[in-house]
Image (cartoon, rainbow, N blue to C red; front, top):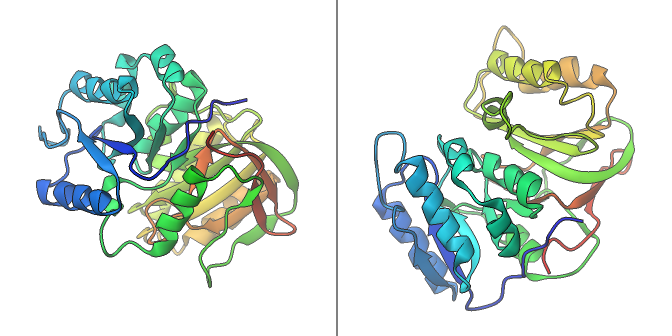
Length: 306
């Protein structure tokens, strides 16, 4: 059973890190102010405000910031500022034995997806496909905060991952399966295939989402996962949103799901509020999920925190 990080409590310390692309100082400051107004203490990593082209800092520097947060006894939640690119570059510089001995809540999406799944694979730590620092702004729907804080502050189980009202989950291939959940951003996974950090889908329910890619490129990525046999050994597939993904050659995202994934015969659901969409369900990476496509339910079978 995966390690559950301690649950969040009022007044806990949030450690802010930048692990990929830089984020404007004004947006960092706004997010920190919001967190403090919510009652959290905030600790800022050394390179949070750094900028070096498309990376915030060197991989070693960003990894050092992350490891410092894991080793700081006061920090309970590690919150990356954003994703972007470059998160995979920090992975060789992480000490997973130290991480597993100092479990923290880690949340994020986009390129942070790589880190979330590697923390589960190498440190056996449950992490959260959910909020980034840039989401702590007045435009973020209450649903996103409710999802995250419900998952990270309570020990209740089982619990449902529900879409916001009016956004229906779609059931495309019938099935009722249970297994640990992995997944996140499709592009980020493709970048790790063939490395020691590629996603492990064996016996898992896999969640995928994408943003700002034409549908023919999304097809290319899905086919890459197929050729890498990542759909062979998973037990079920949940497709999230493809935000701002444009149709190509007369095919839409839903067409691609129906034409490419439905024939695989794996239990399949789609239209989960995820990642780059306006609404973001919180998915505890590494926790055990039940996926019942007949009832259109996604149930987390255990507390995600301790």
